[in-house]
Amino acid sequence: MVGGVRTKLVCLEDGITSCGFRKMAAYAARLNDDTEALYVTTNRYRGIRNALFGGLGSGGDLNDEEVDEVAHGLLGADLVGFSSMTGTRT
Image (cartoon, rainbow, N blue to C red; front, side, top):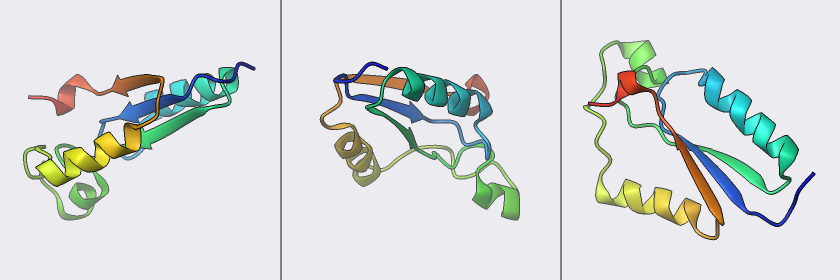
């Protein structure tokens, strides 16, 4: 296993399972001990809230405070990777 490269992987998919991202994040973590997976919901597609109440959500925009929270979560990373599904993007 490799160490020393602080890697943060960010999933922007609102799916409940995020299967593809979770598999890739697990694989990356096996290769690099310092890998962290982060999940950012945009409330655009199939989040838990929408699964319970129906609908597509609020349109997917994050407000400034939410963007700042995500940015602070990425501080200190040497490598950042983003994943999103085209069906959740406009």
